[in-house]
Structure formats: C-alpha cells, structure tokens
Image (cartoon, rainbow, N blue to C red; front, side):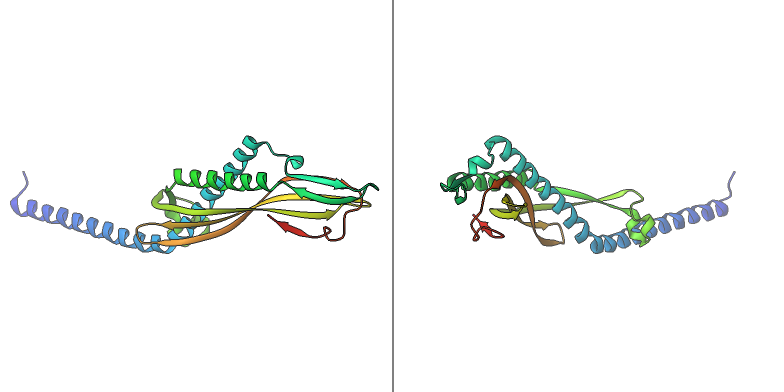
Length: 215
C-alpha cells in the first residue's frame, strides 16, 4: 500500500518526466526544422535535376524509337562529278518534327511527376560526413514545373585523309522551377545527345570543316 505522500511524490516525478519529454521533442523538432531549411534547397535541386533529366532521356529514347530517323532521313549529301562533296542538304520538316516531339514528350513526362518528394537522411544534420547518409529519412515534398527547348547541332570532325565525320546532335535545354512550403528555385541545364553520324568520304568544302550549324 502506497502512502499518499509517496504516491504524490511518484506522480510528481512522472509529470516532470512527461514535461521533460515534451520539451525534448519540441527542441528536436525546432532543431530539425532549422536543419531542413538549410539542406532542403540542395536536396530538392538535386532531386528535381534527376527527375527532369530522366524525363528528357525518356522523351529522346521514345521519340527516336517512334520516328526511327537515321542519318539519311535527316541529311542528304550531294556529290559533284569528280566525287567531292558539293553540298549537304537537311530536311527541315523532319528536324522541326523531331524537336517538337521531343519537347512535347518531355513536357508531358514532367507533368506526370509534378508532385515529387525527397528524403533527407537524419544523419546529415550531425554535420559529420561519415554519418550524412545514415538514419531514417525525413520526407520533403515539392512541386515541379518547367519548360524545354530543343535544337539540332551539326558539326564536322576530321577523321583522317579524305574522311570527315558528320555529327548530328540534339541539345535540350531545361528550365525547371521547384516550389515547396517555404522554398522555391530555378534550375537551368543543358543535355546533349548524338542522334546520328556518318563518315563522309571525299573532299568536304572548307566552310564545313570545323563548323557548327544549328537548326
């Protein structure tokens, strides 16, 4: 049987423990909130860059697979009677269709993942490098939107005696806007893909050598 005085003393200790526990939780929450504010921009930007880059790669892969363009579909090399390169003609209709399809596909894929999230490991709050990826992750949600532009770049590279490599590259520029509860930021980056190339045998006019043509 507990005496009233002892019982009150025990109840008082229990209440103190509860108060200390709540105070500890509040301090941890405030600490984590401040740490999240510090690390959130980096983690959100990295995740947004990763997701948007994946969207661009998927858009390029699917467009190449659907259109099935090769070098001869985009460019036509015209030779003179002596076997030298007279001109290189490009199909502007197909080039524009390719660029349009890429941008629309990337935009649609980004729209499907507009609501995203990233986990920030609890260990990163310690400031110790070896602990930065240890511990449960704190989920931070954010929204993504943005735009894409595509251009076709044609370059010529000397490949030896009487040989020139003609590269046709796709350059996609992405402008991604990320927003969360208390953070917003912009990410601009460029991704380069080679979509076709061929080796031209014969003398190429000097104005092509080392040049870069943009469509």
